[in-house]
Image (tube, rainbow, N blue to C red):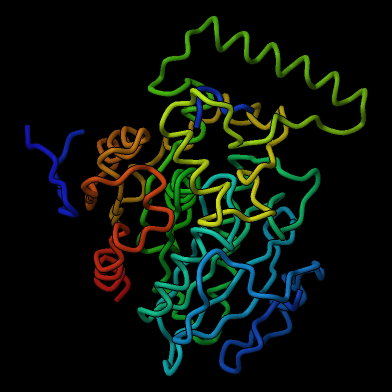
Length: 367
C-alpha cells in the first residue's frame, strides 16, 4: 500500500468537534463591471435588505490588491444570504470564480474570507458567504444548521456569482472549509455547474453527529441522543422558541488539545468574531436532529470526472474525515497532508495553507 506523503506533498493513490457536538445591500455589486444586470434575474433573486456591517470587521487585514463589496442574494428556499465579493484589481474580461464558506460555526469575516481575499489576489473572483441562519445571513431561528439547506447555500452562491458579467460561468469552483467542506462536496456532487472543488480540513458533520468521533457512538448511545432531542422538541414547542446549547469554546480546564486549539482560534484576537457561533455563542440544542439520518457524502463518487482536492493537517484530530472521503471518491482526486499542521492551522495560518497548490489546482481545472 502506498504511504501518504507529507510536508505539503500530495498523493493521488492513498487508500485510504466534539463527540456529539455540544450540541444589503443590493443584490448586485456596485463595482462597475461587477454590476448584475437583467430584469429577470433581478426580479427573481434580488434579496431583501439586511442590516450589514459597513466597517471592515474581518479577522484579517484588508488587501489593496482587490476590490471588495458586500452583497446579498436568496437561496432556493427564499432565505437571504449575506456575502463578501472580492474582485482582483486590473483584471478585465470574463474570469474564473470561486464560492467559499466555512468552517462550521464560523462567519465570512473569519477563515472563508481570508481564503476568498487571498484567492482574489491570485486572479479569481471570489464569494465568501454566511450560511443560512448564521452571521449576517437571514433565517429564523438564529444559529441552526441543516445539511439540506446549507448544501443549497453553495448552489445559491453559484447562481449569484455566475450571473456577474465578469464571471465565466463555465469556470466556477468551490472551496469548503471544516464542516462546510463536507457540505461543499455534497453540493458539487449534485451541482454539475461546478468544475472543481477543494475541501480543506474537512469534517463530515452528518457522520460525527450521528456516529461520534471516530464512529465511536454505540447504538444505545445514539438512541439516547435521539430520545433527548425528541424530548427537547416538546420543551421548545411549549416555550415557543428553541433552547440553545452552552456557550462554545469557553475552557474550564482538562479539555482535549483540539478543544484548546478551537479556543485559541475562536476566543482570542486571532480569530474571534462576535457573530460566529463558535466565538462564545451556540447552536440550538436540536440542531443535530436533521444530521442524524443524513449521510451527506453518500454520492461523493458522482463528483467525478470533476476533480477534488482534499487538504488536511498531519496532526489534525479530524484527519480521518478527509482520508475516508478521499478513499470513497472517484478519480481525479488528490489528498494533500500538511506536515505539522493541526485542524485549525488551516483556518488562517498563511504559511501552512497551501495557497500555491490551490491556485495551481483551480488554474488547471478552471481553464
